[in-house]
Image (cartoon, rainbow, N blue to C red; front, top):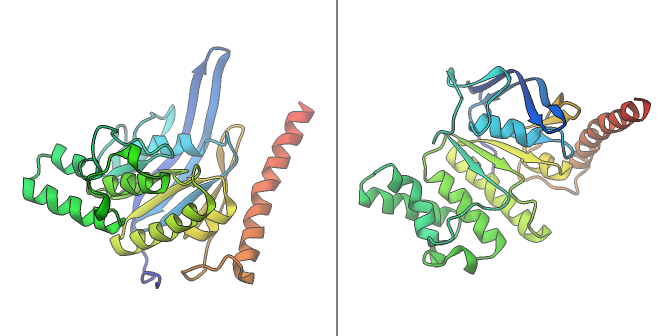
Amino acid sequence: MLDRPTTIAPDILEVSDVRKIYQASNGPVEALRGVNLTIRKGEFVCLLGASGCGKSTLLRIVAGFEKVTEGSVTMYGFSVDKPGPDRGMVFQDYALFPWLTVRDNIGFGPKHRRLATKLVSELTDKFMAMVGLTAFADRYPHQLSGGMKQRVAIARVLSNDTDVLLMDEPFGALDALTRSKLQEELVEIWRTTGLTVIFVTHSVEEAVMLADRVIVMSAGPGRIDCEIEVDLPRPRDVASPEFNALRREVTQRLTSHIAGSRQVAADS
């Protein structure tokens, strides 16, 4: 498997000076402050950070599930203020319709868009095959393994003609072997479809394995600490000196601000 050609792609998504404040019972909580991020078309970006750094909040804002308190998010120059088919979300808990089969879960979006029955069937078959679930078309979610459920969730988003695939720790609940397999499959899907992917994780190895660019976030309130380009050819070898050198660099950047946050908390 080879990387896609390296060309300068246009910017499609812009996060500008985003601030997010929640109103809690004990007062306002600032989840994000001054977040600026530009995503290029076809890019694979990982948002990396410890729990509570606001990475999932940022993803939900990009998805249109949350509104910003200050700042803006635009896609193709248009304001993002609600969910849309151009941004598809894959959750850790799958979020499948339990009463629908694999085929019907994947075909739900095209059918809801009132596409012709033949086209719905063609799209469903295409993406069901892409994630290797053709033989399980008539199974229900409760009859599937965790990895298979996540494949259905990914195929369901792909069938809805999305431009940006948003993934919130989608492999976090899976065993190591299944997780590794799905990482490989996701990279292949990304490579062949030309999708833009924004992937939230707290795993340094997963971020370095998947991303073109790792966005390291710090907490209290959440902000972007640094951006690290991952200039490693695919498929990536976790045992290679180059991979491990980059993993150490990302880990150092991640742990340095965690230690700093703890010190600030201890001094306050």
